[in-house]
Image (cartoon, rainbow, N blue to C red; front, top):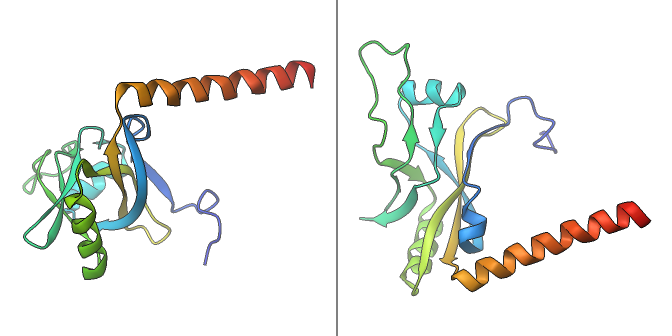
Length: 159
């Protein structure tokens, strides 16, 4: 088994929700499988995916990815997929129960953080159990980030 994901030639990040860590305080994360059609997989391999506006929801004892965008694949002649359809996510019953309980708490939601192909070539998505940040929390996060950059610059100059 490959130890380092970055060195594995099959591991490939497809889409990343960079705003998720800024807009939400992420408590926990979980890896889920995604049920896709053939043209969706081919489109994802060439990089036509966006998960920035999407979210996950537990409905009727199933986990769904809502409002994710996968660009249409030009090579698909007859079986073209819908670009913003709901996609089913695969988790165990225990994980699904834990996610449902987490989302029942006030203000908690399931946010996609990153979508990728794992070392076996399967499409996976990492969901975060998150709570929305208020504006003052976002400013504090940005101030910490700026201070760490400034500190690194000072250490580089005077180090």
